[in-house]
Image (cartoon, rainbow, N blue to C red):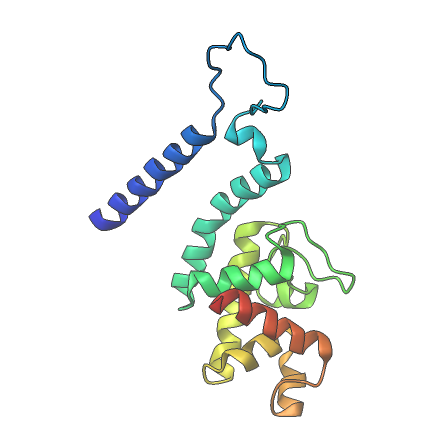
Length: 183
């Protein structure tokens, strides 16, 4: 635990250092004007768009939920984050044309079967999505590609095909999640 605290402290110090570098500090004006010279007019935090700030704040609130769900269902936080990134781009209010909802894009029937009362609640959604994905990993003996396929297209289609369904959306989904996960 001390190593983690030290690492977090080092990260915070590094962030402060970077912010300091990007913070505008007015200097004494020279009597010689250079019309081509540009000076920053805002701090580092102002450079980030409002959407970036909102996303960063949201991700910091979702991260502990992802970590708890990963631990509870024997998954890695990175894998869950990769699924969430591809499913909803970390938007807890995401709703697909098919009706999937929330961070992990749970279908209403799946949500109901997992006891979810509010699919747009990040904690409920991530916990239920992690539970469901973990069950798919178990069903397919740890085969991440089949589990992702079942998460996307449904286990019936994976069972019927005895592999990844011949559905372009599902094939692309599996590829995107794995690329996000493995880098």
